[in-house]
Length: 160
Image 1 (cartoon, helix red, strand yellow):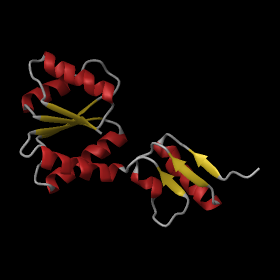
Image 2 (tube, rainbow, N blue to C red):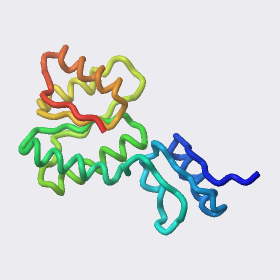
Image 3 (tube, one colour):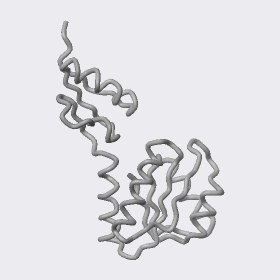
């Protein structure tokens, strides 16, 4: 039996490694949620497709949204310390600087916790209008709840 199409992998690192093997074997690969830019690089590799946008292009779109819909907003970028979220935060910072709307603060937090006191204190001290989260939605909601419990409310929260 010959494999013609693979739908998956959900993990970026596995998908990136597998894509080279599939491309060489002439097997079509459709990655459903992988956003890492290296999945479809190098360009010219045939048969590797993605259904999710690329992280490096998502940052420019977010920066454009912030610059057009929230001009002059005080923005913080909040990420868990994962490679994906940190990379996205770095790309967003670069894009925001290019759009002449640099963030006030880039702050990280350790994933999987329930108490984010240090991160919350940094956000409250910055008094942002917009908080942009590149980590997990559940942790973002916990952090936003703790920010509100500390007496500050972020007007707009955006997740990637």
